Length: 272
Image 1: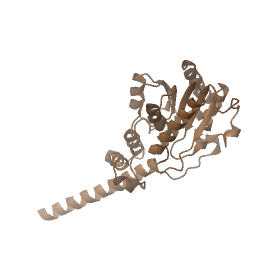
Image 2: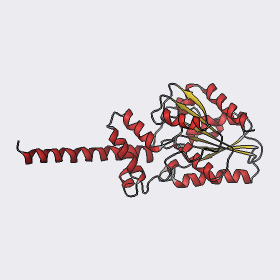
Image 3: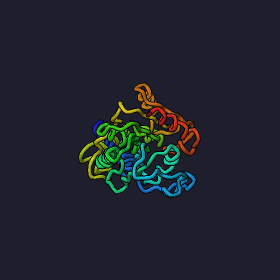
Image 4: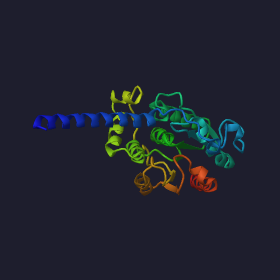
């Protein structure tokens, strides 16, 4: 093989590898930004609707403590219902924010608007304490809302602390080259390129936004989307952390409901 043939072969291989990385990166970004609807086993979600969750809401629209719940990307409002029971037992009123109609769901800028508006409205209606409880991407939206509208506490369940870190974890778990995670991050956050992931505009919030509000993080060491290093960074900044050992993403409650709810109760007690 002469020199020119070697060059052509090398260039062809590079082009093919680059195209493959872009395609895989776009697929990884799409799974995060606009995942296909997912219906898990009933045993994972536990409750079908708010009426099936044990406990009752306080009289009136808003209790002394009001909790705004925000779901993640692949599931809708039903995802957060496991987190209502403990707050009902504490006498709080609860509100579930639905972002499933938005192009980027809970990663959409409008999701932050909705959460912030719910917190502001609860305060205006007389709530003494407002807590935001978000699952996965919903936790990231909660952090952005708290940076805009003062609240008394944040509970992050399998919290998406850093989008790029989460994409790297997902790519590594799928045994794709690390470069695919970098490409996925750029696609998710770059105007124009985001269309490769099937969404009309890129992410604007990619990292946890609030470090002033008292925060509880519930996460699992088996969750590839929440890097242990990111969790430790927030612990060092003052967040309370409850760690589970075996749960997949957002299934910490299912691993040990009693410990999950005890952690929330203890956190709520610190809010006054």
